[in-house]
Image 1 (cartoon, rainbow, N blue to C red):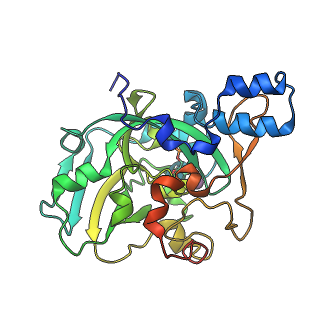
Image 2 (image 1 turned 90 degrees about the vertical axis):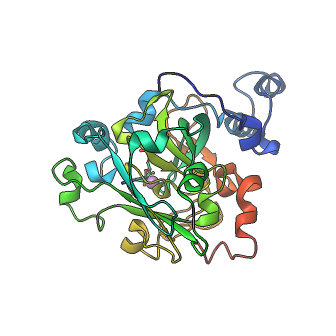
Length: 301
Ligand SMILES: Nc1nc2c(c(=O)[nH]1)N[C@H]1C(S)=C(S)[C@@H](COP(=O)(O)O)O[C@H]1N2
Ligand SMILES: [Mo]
């Protein structure tokens, strides 16, 4: 995984057109960097797909199996053995079984996808992932008729994961998607970032990335994928159901009970880049809004 993969999804596809402005035009119009505040907002929106540094992406993490502090995963995740790795794929599939990591990745179309990443805690980054579409793997295992959801599980290894001695969550970490969300072309199984193997703290060797949902849906270090006809239990929803819904689509208009989701703190960044407005579906509204037609997005949060 030492090379960069080309993507058939360009920046234009994943950037709302109204925000896709030319930075040089903005700066010319503003008469320089010290232009009006409004210009700063526009420049930040344009800059939103400038990836964060590798340093930022790998030192500010949430991976509670290695501790609840933002720097705990970078300090502790080296303890996780990521090779060999196997994934159990079961439930309503034609070819259930245990797959090695190498078997899972074999023949998949690897791409680079530069995605916005928005944590429910109201911080954000831009991350250049390498991986493949979950839909391609699901096609390979053969989803049976009647399956409606996909459930995911993270490894649970107390001897390698100091954080699971603390019952902050009901381990193993579990997540899930509706089948149509799982099949969406934006939904990625990531195996790398910045063209290198995924660092352990980011969910090695393979993790989910669902860019229009809050970050906790993007489950790390997956060991099990189950097709089912019932909405699966998910860790944060089980822990605090009034705060974290099953859907958890990024929505600036629906506040978390304890804080607003209208804006986000940008990790890293330069002069202007401390806070920016949060976008509906994290900026992927054109691509995913149709999945939720007719649903009350405040009720199904
Ligand atoms: N297994 C597992 N997956 C997880 C988490 C976790 O604690 N355990 N944290 C989630 C949360 S809250 C976020 S914001 C993202 C963080 O991903 P990153 O550290 O790669 O930025 O991972 C998600 N996936
Ligand atoms: Mo998060």
